[in-house]
Image (cartoon, rainbow over all chains, first blue to last red; front, top):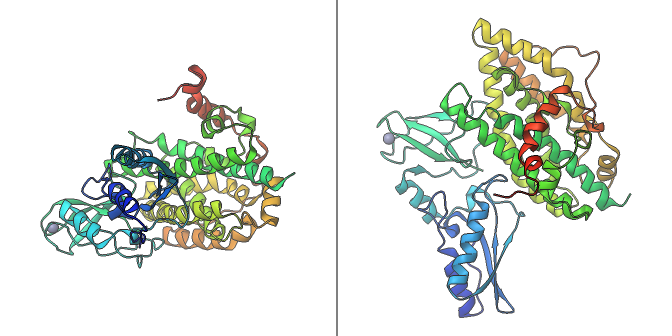
Length: 167
Length: 252
Ligand SMILES: [Zn+2]
Protein backbone atom coordinates (compact mmCIF):
# COMPACT_ATOMS: atom_id res chain seq x y z
CA UNK A 1 0.00 0.00 0.00
CA UNK A 2 1.26 3.46 -0.84
CA UNK A 3 0.11 6.16 1.53
CA UNK A 4 0.43 9.84 0.79
CA UNK A 5 3.72 10.64 2.49
CA UNK A 6 3.79 12.71 5.64
CA UNK A 7 4.19 16.14 4.15
CA UNK A 8 6.32 18.78 5.66
CA UNK A 9 4.78 21.67 3.85
CA UNK A 10 1.79 22.79 1.89
CA UNK A 11 3.56 23.05 -1.44
CA UNK A 12 4.59 19.43 -1.27
CA UNK A 13 1.05 18.43 -0.38
CA UNK A 14 -0.25 20.41 -3.33
CA UNK A 15 2.28 18.77 -5.67
CA UNK A 16 1.16 15.32 -4.47
CA UNK A 17 -2.50 16.23 -4.96
CA UNK A 18 -1.85 17.50 -8.50
CA UNK A 19 0.09 14.39 -9.54
CA UNK A 20 -2.28 12.03 -7.72
CA UNK A 21 -5.29 13.31 -9.68
CA UNK A 22 -3.84 12.26 -13.07
CA UNK A 23 -6.08 9.58 -14.62
CA UNK A 24 -4.68 6.36 -16.06
CA UNK A 25 -4.69 6.74 -19.85
CA UNK A 26 -6.06 3.25 -20.49
CA UNK A 27 -8.48 3.01 -17.56
CA UNK A 28 -9.44 6.66 -17.05
CA UNK A 29 -11.90 5.89 -14.23
CA UNK A 30 -8.96 5.49 -11.85
CA UNK A 31 -6.09 7.83 -11.05
CA UNK A 32 -2.41 6.99 -10.76
CA UNK A 33 -2.82 7.25 -6.99
CA UNK A 34 -5.80 4.84 -6.99
CA UNK A 35 -3.65 2.33 -8.87
CA UNK A 36 -0.74 2.81 -6.48
CA UNK A 37 1.74 3.55 -9.26
CA UNK A 38 2.49 7.07 -8.03
CA UNK A 39 4.98 6.25 -5.32
CA UNK A 40 6.09 9.63 -4.04
CA UNK A 41 6.22 13.32 -4.84
CA UNK A 42 9.01 15.29 -3.25
CA UNK A 43 10.06 18.92 -3.51
CA UNK A 44 13.83 19.13 -3.86
CA UNK A 45 15.37 22.57 -4.44
CA UNK A 46 12.04 23.80 -5.75
CA UNK A 47 11.65 20.93 -8.24
CA UNK A 48 8.76 18.51 -7.85
CA UNK A 49 10.16 15.02 -8.31
CA UNK A 50 7.46 12.41 -8.92
CA UNK A 51 8.33 8.74 -8.61
CA UNK A 52 6.26 6.47 -10.81
CA UNK A 53 6.48 2.69 -11.12
CA UNK A 54 5.30 0.68 -14.13
CA UNK A 55 2.51 -1.87 -13.74
CA UNK A 56 3.91 -4.37 -16.28
CA UNK A 57 7.43 -4.44 -17.79
CA UNK A 58 5.94 -3.97 -21.22
CA UNK A 59 3.15 -1.58 -20.27
CA UNK A 60 2.79 0.65 -23.35
CA UNK A 61 1.17 3.35 -21.20
CA UNK A 62 4.27 3.97 -19.07
CA UNK A 63 5.52 6.89 -21.16
CA UNK A 64 2.04 8.39 -21.47
CA UNK A 65 1.59 8.19 -17.69
CA UNK A 66 4.97 9.78 -16.98
CA UNK A 67 4.30 12.55 -19.46
CA UNK A 68 0.81 13.18 -18.03
CA UNK A 69 2.17 13.45 -14.49
CA UNK A 70 4.92 15.83 -15.61
CA UNK A 71 2.45 17.95 -17.58
CA UNK A 72 0.03 18.15 -14.65
CA UNK A 73 2.81 19.37 -12.36
CA UNK A 74 4.03 21.91 -14.94
CA UNK A 75 0.50 23.19 -15.47
CA UNK A 76 0.17 23.68 -11.72
CA UNK A 77 3.24 25.92 -11.79
CA UNK A 78 5.86 23.45 -10.57
CA UNK A 79 9.21 22.71 -12.11
CA UNK A 80 8.84 18.98 -12.57
CA UNK A 81 10.77 15.79 -13.06
CA UNK A 82 9.49 12.21 -13.25
CA UNK A 83 11.61 9.27 -12.15
CA UNK A 84 10.83 5.66 -13.01
CA UNK A 85 11.38 3.28 -10.10
CA UNK A 86 11.39 -0.51 -10.41
CA UNK A 87 11.90 -1.69 -6.87
CA UNK A 88 9.91 -2.67 -4.92
CA UNK A 89 7.84 -3.98 -7.79
CA UNK A 90 4.23 -2.86 -8.09
CA UNK A 91 1.58 -5.41 -7.26
CA UNK A 92 -2.19 -5.22 -7.67
CA UNK A 93 -2.38 -5.24 -3.85
CA UNK A 94 -1.38 -1.57 -4.06
CA UNK A 95 -4.63 -0.62 -5.76
CA UNK A 96 -6.56 1.28 -3.10
CA UNK A 97 -10.00 0.20 -1.88
CA UNK A 98 -11.38 3.32 -3.51
CA UNK A 99 -9.63 2.33 -6.74
CA UNK A 100 -11.17 -1.16 -6.57
CA UNK A 101 -14.63 0.30 -6.11
CA UNK A 102 -14.11 2.65 -9.08
CA UNK A 103 -13.00 -0.27 -11.27
CA UNK A 104 -16.07 -2.30 -10.33
CA UNK A 105 -18.41 0.64 -11.05
CA UNK A 106 -16.67 1.05 -14.42
CA UNK A 107 -17.37 -2.59 -15.33
CA UNK A 108 -13.94 -4.10 -14.58
CA UNK A 109 -13.76 -6.80 -11.93
CA UNK A 110 -11.03 -5.70 -9.49
CA UNK A 111 -8.07 -8.02 -8.81
CA UNK A 112 -8.13 -10.53 -6.01
CA UNK A 113 -5.67 -9.97 -3.23
CA UNK A 114 -2.52 -11.96 -3.95
CA UNK A 115 -3.77 -15.35 -2.76
CA UNK A 116 -4.27 -16.50 -6.35
CA UNK A 117 -1.78 -19.09 -7.53
CA UNK A 118 -0.72 -17.84 -10.94
CA UNK A 119 1.23 -20.99 -11.62
CA UNK A 120 -1.54 -23.51 -11.07
CA UNK A 121 -2.58 -25.00 -14.38
CA UNK A 122 -6.26 -24.35 -15.00
CA UNK A 123 -6.08 -22.64 -11.63
CA UNK A 124 -9.39 -20.82 -11.62
CA UNK A 125 -10.23 -18.15 -9.14
CA UNK A 126 -13.86 -17.17 -8.74
CA UNK A 127 -14.31 -13.75 -10.27
CA UNK A 128 -17.58 -11.96 -9.48
CA UNK A 129 -19.38 -10.22 -12.34
CA UNK A 130 -18.94 -6.45 -11.90
CA UNK A 131 -22.46 -5.84 -13.26
CA UNK A 132 -24.75 -8.29 -11.46
CA UNK A 133 -22.42 -9.62 -8.78
CA UNK A 134 -22.92 -13.26 -9.79
CA UNK A 135 -20.01 -15.59 -9.19
CA UNK A 136 -21.13 -17.82 -12.07
CA UNK A 137 -18.53 -16.53 -14.52
CA UNK A 138 -16.16 -18.16 -17.02
CA UNK A 139 -12.74 -17.15 -18.20
CA UNK A 140 -12.66 -16.54 -21.96
CA UNK A 141 -8.99 -15.67 -22.19
CA UNK A 142 -6.07 -15.19 -19.82
CA UNK A 143 -5.05 -12.13 -21.80
CA UNK A 144 -7.50 -9.33 -22.52
CA UNK A 145 -7.65 -5.88 -24.06
CA UNK A 146 -4.57 -4.65 -22.16
CA UNK A 147 -1.69 -6.59 -20.56
CA UNK A 148 -3.18 -6.11 -17.10
CA UNK A 149 -6.58 -7.63 -17.86
CA UNK A 150 -8.10 -11.05 -18.55
CA UNK A 151 -11.30 -11.59 -20.47
CA UNK A 152 -14.34 -13.08 -18.68
CA UNK A 153 -18.01 -13.65 -19.32
CA UNK A 154 -20.88 -13.71 -16.84
CA UNK A 155 -23.00 -16.86 -17.13
CA UNK A 156 -25.85 -15.19 -15.23
CA UNK A 157 -26.36 -11.87 -17.04
CA UNK A 158 -24.36 -13.03 -20.11
CA UNK A 159 -22.31 -9.81 -20.25
CA UNK A 160 -18.63 -10.05 -21.16
CA UNK A 161 -16.29 -8.14 -18.85
CA UNK A 162 -12.62 -7.48 -18.07
CA UNK A 163 -10.94 -8.83 -14.95
CA UNK A 164 -7.97 -6.85 -13.66
CA UNK A 165 -5.46 -9.68 -13.24
CA UNK A 166 -3.77 -10.30 -9.97
CA UNK A 167 -0.06 -9.47 -10.21
CA UNK B 1 36.97 -7.96 -17.35
CA UNK B 2 35.36 -5.49 -14.98
CA UNK B 3 32.13 -6.74 -13.33
CA UNK B 4 30.11 -3.89 -14.89
CA UNK B 5 31.25 -4.84 -18.41
CA UNK B 6 30.57 -8.52 -17.75
CA UNK B 7 27.13 -7.75 -16.40
CA UNK B 8 26.34 -5.55 -19.41
CA UNK B 9 27.30 -8.35 -21.79
CA UNK B 10 25.32 -10.97 -19.86
CA UNK B 11 22.25 -8.74 -19.71
CA UNK B 12 22.40 -8.14 -23.46
CA UNK B 13 22.43 -11.93 -23.98
CA UNK B 14 19.39 -12.24 -21.73
CA UNK B 15 17.78 -9.28 -23.49
CA UNK B 16 18.35 -11.02 -26.85
CA UNK B 17 16.39 -14.08 -25.69
CA UNK B 18 13.47 -11.82 -24.81
CA UNK B 19 13.62 -9.58 -27.88
CA UNK B 20 13.75 -12.48 -30.33
CA UNK B 21 11.02 -14.51 -28.64
CA UNK B 22 8.92 -11.35 -28.37
CA UNK B 23 9.35 -10.79 -32.09
CA UNK B 24 8.35 -14.36 -32.88
CA UNK B 25 5.20 -14.03 -30.76
CA UNK B 26 4.33 -10.71 -32.38
CA UNK B 27 4.35 -12.44 -35.77
CA UNK B 28 1.11 -14.14 -34.70
CA UNK B 29 -0.66 -10.79 -34.38
CA UNK B 30 -3.57 -10.88 -36.82
CA UNK B 31 -3.02 -14.57 -37.65
CA UNK B 32 -4.11 -16.39 -34.49
CA UNK B 33 -6.88 -18.99 -34.83
CA UNK B 34 -9.31 -17.01 -32.65
CA UNK B 35 -9.70 -13.50 -31.35
CA UNK B 36 -8.78 -14.40 -27.77
CA UNK B 37 -5.45 -15.83 -28.90
CA UNK B 38 -4.93 -12.86 -31.18
CA UNK B 39 -4.93 -10.82 -27.97
CA UNK B 40 -2.87 -13.27 -25.90
CA UNK B 41 0.02 -13.52 -28.30
CA UNK B 42 0.77 -9.79 -28.60
CA UNK B 43 0.29 -9.48 -24.83
CA UNK B 44 2.93 -12.12 -24.18
CA UNK B 45 5.10 -10.48 -26.85
CA UNK B 46 4.71 -7.20 -24.97
CA UNK B 47 5.90 -8.82 -21.74
CA UNK B 48 8.97 -10.13 -23.59
CA UNK B 49 9.69 -6.76 -25.22
CA UNK B 50 9.21 -4.86 -21.97
CA UNK B 51 11.68 -7.15 -20.21
CA UNK B 52 14.12 -6.82 -23.13
CA UNK B 53 13.88 -3.02 -22.98
CA UNK B 54 14.67 -2.96 -19.26
CA UNK B 55 17.66 -5.25 -19.77
CA UNK B 56 19.04 -3.41 -22.82
CA UNK B 57 18.62 0.04 -21.29
CA UNK B 58 20.38 -0.98 -18.09
CA UNK B 59 23.13 -2.81 -20.02
CA UNK B 60 23.66 0.16 -22.33
CA UNK B 61 24.28 2.39 -19.31
CA UNK B 62 26.64 -0.11 -17.67
CA UNK B 63 28.84 -0.68 -20.72
CA UNK B 64 29.04 3.08 -21.27
CA UNK B 65 29.60 2.92 -25.03
CA UNK B 66 26.71 5.22 -25.81
CA UNK B 67 24.40 2.44 -27.02
CA UNK B 68 20.72 2.75 -26.12
CA UNK B 69 17.98 0.11 -26.29
CA UNK B 70 17.30 0.83 -29.97
CA UNK B 71 20.98 0.52 -30.97
CA UNK B 72 21.14 -2.84 -29.21
CA UNK B 73 17.86 -4.12 -30.63
CA UNK B 74 18.18 -2.90 -34.20
CA UNK B 75 21.75 -2.14 -35.16
CA UNK B 76 23.78 -5.26 -34.53
CA UNK B 77 24.70 -7.98 -37.00
CA UNK B 78 23.47 -11.56 -36.67
CA UNK B 79 26.66 -12.86 -35.03
CA UNK B 80 26.38 -10.22 -32.31
CA UNK B 81 23.05 -11.60 -31.05
CA UNK B 82 23.59 -14.22 -28.36
CA UNK B 83 20.04 -15.53 -27.92
CA UNK B 84 19.63 -19.27 -27.51
CA UNK B 85 18.44 -21.09 -30.63
CA UNK B 86 15.14 -22.13 -29.05
CA UNK B 87 13.68 -18.62 -29.15
CA UNK B 88 14.45 -18.08 -32.84
CA UNK B 89 12.79 -21.32 -33.98
CA UNK B 90 9.97 -20.55 -36.42
CA UNK B 91 6.41 -20.31 -35.09
CA UNK B 92 5.28 -23.39 -37.01
CA UNK B 93 1.78 -24.35 -35.87
CA UNK B 94 0.14 -23.56 -32.55
CA UNK B 95 1.70 -26.65 -30.99
CA UNK B 96 5.21 -25.42 -31.82
CA UNK B 97 4.56 -21.87 -30.61
CA UNK B 98 2.98 -22.90 -27.30
CA UNK B 99 5.56 -25.57 -26.56
CA UNK B 100 8.42 -23.14 -27.27
CA UNK B 101 6.77 -20.65 -24.90
CA UNK B 102 6.34 -23.28 -22.20
CA UNK B 103 9.98 -24.40 -22.47
CA UNK B 104 11.23 -20.82 -22.18
CA UNK B 105 8.81 -19.69 -19.45
CA UNK B 106 9.48 -22.82 -17.38
CA UNK B 107 13.14 -21.74 -17.39
CA UNK B 108 12.67 -18.00 -16.86
CA UNK B 109 10.29 -18.40 -13.92
CA UNK B 110 12.84 -19.99 -11.57
CA UNK B 111 15.51 -17.73 -13.11
CA UNK B 112 13.68 -14.54 -12.15
CA UNK B 113 12.67 -16.06 -8.84
CA UNK B 114 16.34 -16.58 -8.00
CA UNK B 115 17.26 -13.16 -9.41
CA UNK B 116 15.03 -11.44 -6.85
CA UNK B 117 17.94 -11.96 -4.43
CA UNK B 118 20.58 -10.62 -6.85
CA UNK B 119 23.33 -8.45 -5.37
CA UNK B 120 22.25 -5.79 -7.90
CA UNK B 121 19.07 -4.00 -6.83
CA UNK B 122 18.16 -2.96 -10.38
CA UNK B 123 18.08 -6.64 -11.37
CA UNK B 124 16.07 -7.40 -8.24
CA UNK B 125 13.48 -4.88 -9.35
CA UNK B 126 13.24 -6.27 -12.90
CA UNK B 127 13.02 -9.81 -11.49
CA UNK B 128 10.25 -9.05 -8.99
CA UNK B 129 8.09 -7.85 -11.83
CA UNK B 130 9.07 -10.36 -14.49
CA UNK B 131 8.60 -13.41 -12.26
CA UNK B 132 4.89 -12.66 -11.95
CA UNK B 133 4.47 -11.92 -15.64
CA UNK B 134 6.20 -15.10 -16.77
CA UNK B 135 4.03 -17.18 -14.40
CA UNK B 136 1.06 -16.37 -16.64
CA UNK B 137 3.03 -17.59 -19.67
CA UNK B 138 3.62 -20.98 -18.03
CA UNK B 139 -0.06 -21.24 -17.22
CA UNK B 140 -1.27 -20.14 -20.64
CA UNK B 141 1.21 -22.13 -22.71
CA UNK B 142 0.93 -25.12 -20.35
CA UNK B 143 -2.84 -25.21 -20.72
CA UNK B 144 -2.50 -25.22 -24.50
CA UNK B 145 0.09 -27.98 -24.50
CA UNK B 146 -2.26 -30.09 -22.37
CA UNK B 147 -5.31 -29.20 -24.47
CA UNK B 148 -3.55 -30.16 -27.70
CA UNK B 149 -1.68 -33.19 -26.34
CA UNK B 150 -4.85 -34.54 -24.75
CA UNK B 151 -7.06 -33.41 -27.63
CA UNK B 152 -7.96 -34.91 -30.98
CA UNK B 153 -5.90 -37.45 -32.85
CA UNK B 154 -4.50 -34.72 -35.09
CA UNK B 155 -3.74 -32.23 -32.28
CA UNK B 156 -1.96 -34.96 -30.29
CA UNK B 157 0.06 -35.93 -33.33
CA UNK B 158 1.09 -32.33 -33.98
CA UNK B 159 1.98 -31.77 -30.34
CA UNK B 160 4.18 -34.87 -30.47
CA UNK B 161 5.89 -33.53 -33.59
CA UNK B 162 6.55 -30.20 -31.86
CA UNK B 163 8.21 -32.02 -28.95
CA UNK B 164 10.50 -33.90 -31.36
CA UNK B 165 11.32 -30.69 -33.22
CA UNK B 166 12.01 -28.47 -30.21
CA UNK B 167 13.17 -30.55 -27.26
CA UNK B 168 16.72 -30.72 -28.58
CA UNK B 169 17.01 -26.95 -28.25
CA UNK B 170 16.21 -26.80 -24.54
CA UNK B 171 19.67 -27.80 -23.27
CA UNK B 172 21.11 -24.47 -24.38
CA UNK B 173 18.90 -22.67 -21.84
CA UNK B 174 21.19 -24.06 -19.15
CA UNK B 175 24.49 -23.15 -20.79
CA UNK B 176 26.46 -20.10 -19.73
CA UNK B 177 28.83 -17.64 -21.41
CA UNK B 178 32.08 -16.39 -19.84
CA UNK B 179 30.47 -13.14 -18.80
CA UNK B 180 27.46 -14.94 -17.28
CA UNK B 181 29.92 -17.02 -15.28
CA UNK B 182 31.49 -13.84 -13.85
CA UNK B 183 28.02 -12.58 -12.93
CA UNK B 184 27.06 -15.89 -11.32
CA UNK B 185 30.20 -15.82 -9.16
CA UNK B 186 29.46 -12.22 -8.14
CA UNK B 187 25.89 -13.24 -7.22
CA UNK B 188 24.49 -10.83 -9.80
CA UNK B 189 22.68 -13.49 -11.84
CA UNK B 190 21.48 -17.02 -10.99
CA UNK B 191 23.31 -20.12 -12.17
CA UNK B 192 21.11 -21.72 -14.87
CA UNK B 193 22.41 -25.19 -14.05
CA UNK B 194 20.77 -24.93 -10.63
CA UNK B 195 17.38 -24.28 -12.22
CA UNK B 196 17.27 -27.57 -14.07
CA UNK B 197 15.31 -29.49 -11.42
CA UNK B 198 12.55 -26.90 -11.35
CA UNK B 199 12.41 -26.83 -15.15
CA UNK B 200 12.23 -30.63 -15.31
CA UNK B 201 9.43 -30.62 -12.74
CA UNK B 202 7.28 -28.14 -14.65
CA UNK B 203 7.77 -29.91 -17.97
CA UNK B 204 7.15 -33.36 -16.47
CA UNK B 205 3.95 -32.17 -14.81
CA UNK B 206 2.58 -30.69 -18.03
CA UNK B 207 3.72 -33.61 -20.19
CA UNK B 208 2.07 -36.11 -17.84
CA UNK B 209 -1.27 -34.33 -18.21
CA UNK B 210 -0.76 -33.92 -21.95
CA UNK B 211 0.16 -37.60 -22.49
CA UNK B 212 3.49 -36.58 -23.99
CA UNK B 213 6.82 -38.28 -23.45
CA UNK B 214 10.16 -36.57 -23.07
CA UNK B 215 12.34 -37.74 -25.95
CA UNK B 216 15.95 -38.89 -25.77
CA UNK B 217 18.18 -36.21 -27.27
CA UNK B 218 21.55 -37.68 -28.27
CA UNK B 219 22.84 -34.44 -29.81
CA UNK B 220 21.49 -31.23 -28.24
CA UNK B 221 21.43 -28.21 -30.56
CA UNK B 222 23.35 -25.15 -29.47
CA UNK B 223 25.36 -22.25 -30.87
CA UNK B 224 23.22 -19.19 -30.30
CA UNK B 225 25.15 -18.21 -27.17
CA UNK B 226 28.27 -17.99 -29.40
CA UNK B 227 26.44 -16.03 -32.08
CA UNK B 228 26.01 -19.03 -34.40
CA UNK B 229 22.39 -19.03 -35.48
CA UNK B 230 20.02 -21.05 -37.63
CA UNK B 231 19.11 -19.98 -41.15
CA UNK B 232 15.71 -18.75 -39.97
CA UNK B 233 17.39 -16.14 -37.80
CA UNK B 234 18.62 -14.09 -40.78
CA UNK B 235 15.09 -13.80 -42.10
CA UNK B 236 13.82 -12.83 -38.67
CA UNK B 237 16.46 -10.09 -38.33
CA UNK B 238 15.83 -8.64 -41.77
CA UNK B 239 12.19 -8.14 -40.80
CA UNK B 240 13.00 -6.91 -37.28
CA UNK B 241 15.64 -4.41 -38.44
CA UNK B 242 14.02 -3.32 -41.68
CA UNK B 243 12.81 0.08 -40.52
CA UNK B 244 16.04 1.20 -38.85
CA UNK B 245 18.16 -0.08 -41.73
CA UNK B 246 16.01 1.67 -44.32
CA UNK B 247 15.58 4.95 -42.43
CA UNK B 248 18.61 5.10 -40.09
CA UNK B 249 17.89 6.95 -36.87
CA UNK B 250 14.16 7.26 -37.51
CA UNK B 251 11.88 7.81 -34.53
CA UNK B 252 8.11 7.73 -34.24
ZN1 LIG C 1 -23.35 -10.66 -14.56
